[in-house]
Image 1 (cartoon, rainbow, N blue to C red):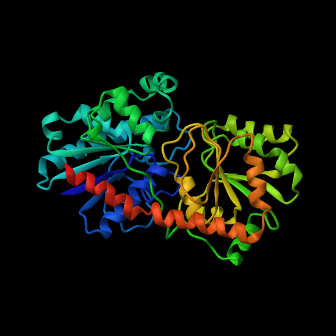
Image 2: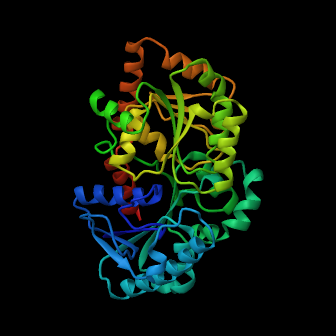
Length: 395
């Protein structure tokens, strides 16, 4: 059996911009290699791919489409289509010539939708078709999400209906798929995301101070939020919730990092801070490459906040825990990831953060150590990959 992990076409693997799904593909592949499991990656062609030792086979697309487009506009959608069509023909050729049993593990609705439309059912039957649902909308109540799912994610519905195995990242998503798409429960398995605990790890106090100095944050205590800048992630909501705490503590700042998906929302965040009189305490750090760069940002934070309206299984929470930085979750579909994770409401998040930030140092260290232990014990990628592999073997 050979597993083919399929890049989405959003950005080349290894990702040099924040790209959660590409990180999942990369880390699963690394873990399979450690298990001596035969594996390969199909990924969009790149003019300049980051250094790697991954078994990547490129799917050629015009060079215009090899650039990362974080705006998620029309060019992004067209790129997905062009890549998905080229990918389908690549897979069609593989299926005709490959003697190994192939597991085709898709992570994007466009990719699998076009594969089902352009490759015959007879040829598709030669492979095990697996799909991981990364879409946070499926975790929302069905009445709230159904119109959006049918209008914007009809391709995903078709994709899952043509899969042999579906990985859902949380129980709400799993239940929604089973109940509302009439898919057999045996086909839908809950598999969590993971984190590379070697890359995302605590740094020394000296290194942290050096990074803070470079970012002009020396002497500051930092509440950090990581994620693309747009309404779902809720940076403006965070500013509103944290403004009183920021005003009370002169050395405390709220810093956020991530690609700007919506310039309009970015301006809303800035205007919200100005209206509440904390514009000098709200700092946009920019966008950072996943891995070493992002780990440095988690490390300089005293705590991170997570405030998304919907999310499948947020890697940012696991990365923060792995770096030894506790996560304060204030989200309607909040999940407790274990020790080091503090679930809050918008009414009490400021009080809970204050209790942690200004508690005694021994207590803070214990919580930070617990956060790191949670990531290492529960969310290592080797464990997640083994869970996936066991499901493939069953088929």
